[in-house]
Length: 310
Ligand SMILES: [Zn+2]
Image 1 (cartoon, rainbow, N blue to C red):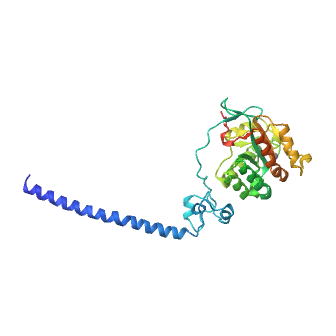
Image 2: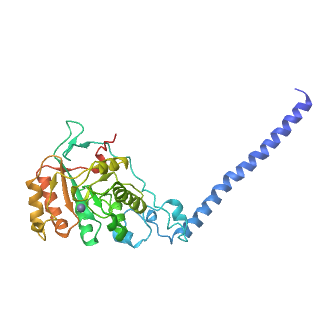
Image 3: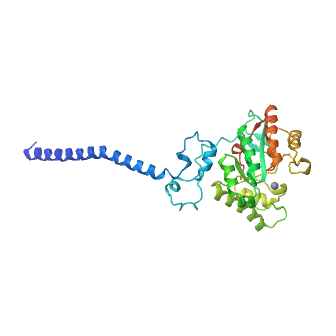
């Protein structure tokens, strides 16, 4: 190795050593700077009251006082002047969707995909809401108590009046279905009316909750081929029911016992149980679910229903 090369080599080493020192300084300083910034950011955000900042043990009432929807995206949280309030809510971070376990047959009854799967199950559904917290909240509480999921088939007009109740259904982990905008009999309506009645509900539910319904139930159980095709095109499973609670009938008015006995009289494995958001149904739900459990029945998680679409 020549002297010149050696000298060049030394120069390179010295330079490299300086770079190393510089890097070492940044390595020490950067984390401190980042930490300082984080503290500043945290201090700025502490008034924003996002639910994410609350410990998991905070009771629901305390969370209610926090006005920020839990589904707010991180970017919306950073924006403190509320400029993002209009932005469509993003879906909540969800766990892996459960595996499909049931399919619906032509009689709107649910059967297990695997033969060995338990067929002593029912699907719980509540139509015509969301109407009133005094009815909806007890329904949700009872479902939680039994760790049961249900489909709430909503009407667009109700959602327009009570978007916060629709959001509540979604936040409580229940499933939202499309029950048409106006609850009109769709059987003899022209295609453009049917399109609107279906599409507008998809749109408003997505706007409020960030999710799109996967289930459709026609008002009065009345439909036609065009409606069925439209529902399929929208990616939804069309269903009426196989077990009517008759809770809408005058005979069941203010009579929770009648609702319970009507369901139990028609009970069969895979029952698709039609109920409504009504005060006496809210009252009937706990004794009904208690008896179903005693009879060995479980509750189908709507997310485990296979949506068969060609
Ligand atoms: Zn209805």
